[in-house]
Length: 409
Image 1 (cartoon, one colour):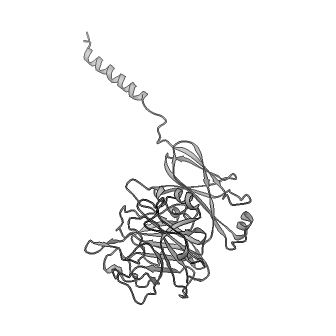
Image 2 (cartoon, helix red, strand yellow; image 1 turned 135 degrees about the vertical axis):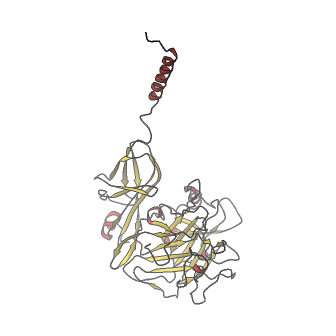
Image 3 (tube, rainbow, N blue to C red; image 1 turned 60 degrees about the horizontal axis):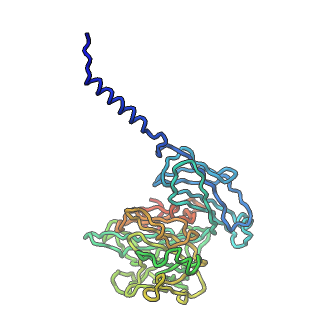
């Protein structure tokens, strides 16, 4: 006769109950399951007539991973089998001069324009439809191609900041005379002097604040060939002798002469004109190595020295920034700090119609030798054309190996 084992039976029953209990707790709607999202592309608000929104490429970006989808006749691009996460969605396409004229009624452009839009940091968790507004920007002949602001550590492991530079690039098929061109550095306080909401409240959305303005001399007679560059340095010397991550800037086209003598200047390199500077005791381009940098280029017949100035929002004394009209801006690039807690979009200084996104270096405090530079789009009539969708998130890469005048690693 088989003996009844009460203890084993009890243990088996308990195990069975636990198994059933755990099974009943499984969430078959787990957020990691794939879903779909539809992106409705919306044409620019200043278009006076409807444009064809079909067959436009919409890109979904998650870190360094991207996926693309084409819009249908209604301008909707659908991403199926997408994993729930925080994505950036963007689109961009070119218009001919005739297409731009038909859409806007303007005779302003003959060489064309670019329509682009971006939705940054959008949470995708379930089947949904998101609207993607777009803006139109005139195709620029001259763009900001490269900026080096991160600095490095020298051969003695000391902070080295003398090698910062800005590089401009000629996108067009014709030579461009950059004489008289202005370069502006945006306000970059750790706590914004004005948020964009403050700026809109006080001045509208047609100005930005600049802390420094420089000008290529009006009599420079400096022409840039198609696919050519303009290299503007704080110190036009070979900085590679101080650190391998630095650059040889001996062939810089212009130099901001340091009035303090802290940086070594090259007497054979033409000088930039200092138009406005909030800093006393220094004249160099003050781009913060932590990544909080915004740069614009502009032309105007007005005298920027006479433009309105403002103190910090709500203040009546202290540092004064130039209130610069955005209507003269040809191009703008914004970099945000890559904080350990992520990017703070409240720190943006440039309106979306100047730069709809932002770029950044990987280092959170700089001194990494990282350069931000525009990606190459195509070859046109024997020269490179760089990516220009009016969105630095799409347009720029970061590198520690690419150097001046070069756009291929």
